[in-house]
Length: 420
Image (cartoon, rainbow, N blue to C red; front, side, top):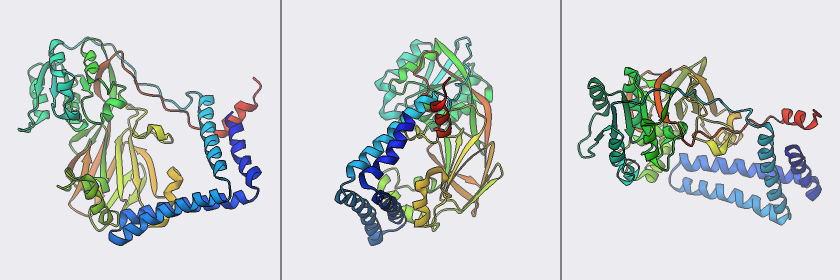
């Protein structure tokens, strides 16, 4: 089915429009490139130029659609896109889970006797109170500390004090930044860590396969749980569970205005950040690869999924023992248009390394660590700590969605032609 759909997608335009289809396809691709260039100008310029760039990006797509309508082939474009989607779906189904990864091994261990849980009542719009997490955890024998938003507390110090008093498990109901701080203490003392998905986005909980809709189910780990051994990332002396970002995002979130007016702050600051008039000029080294003056760099605790639009922001593994590195370097509209090539673009560089060093042209560099805006002295060293964290999770949980197989058209052809 996959191969048939691909052949049909290639043949249909020739049958419906003849050799004209080649010119129409070239015009469509040119329209995409012009729109990408327009978006680059819109993000990197201000005032009248920004308005004209947005108009150009929109006009390019309107012109493409108008040409297809005038030529009477708009229906062909819709059918071709549907055929390509069908080909990808069928091809991945035919290859099964060939591209998947094994889940971390589960270890049955005794239930904790003195669990200690830190809860942020403001996280996730008040999920702690809405789901009665404090009361449910205390019924299960946990000691719970509610953070007071009016009086900021050092959660790492709270966790260390709890361990000194005999806690044999540390848990957090809060955002990923708080999770990371307490996870670092748990790893330091070799005791299990429990994640309660009470944050806003819960990226760490997602990659652990936890239920993000009902955080109270995470408390099942206290009575019917298993342990996973996963990696931690470390930047300087600080632990991260998801990622650290340098460049554009890190510079923007440092602005005092960002919290109250995100969109306008981004639009106001991006032109200077993207054209290197604001912020540090970065140099990134790792595993024999070097990037100079990228606009943005993301270093993650294990690499993020690629080649699957539905799985963006997910990691297939948390125990591979490497950092994922993604760098973006775009200095003009031509390079912006080239980003349409995805991972094959020269402006988008991705690799893995067990250690990454980020240097800058100043004494300090702005960094976003699991979503928190911080500053670090340069150069900044990021390392992977393989298997550093014992995570206790419920034995019964939704689990991590397995990634679809990577499309290998040569292998699909061999499968289709085989008689065995």
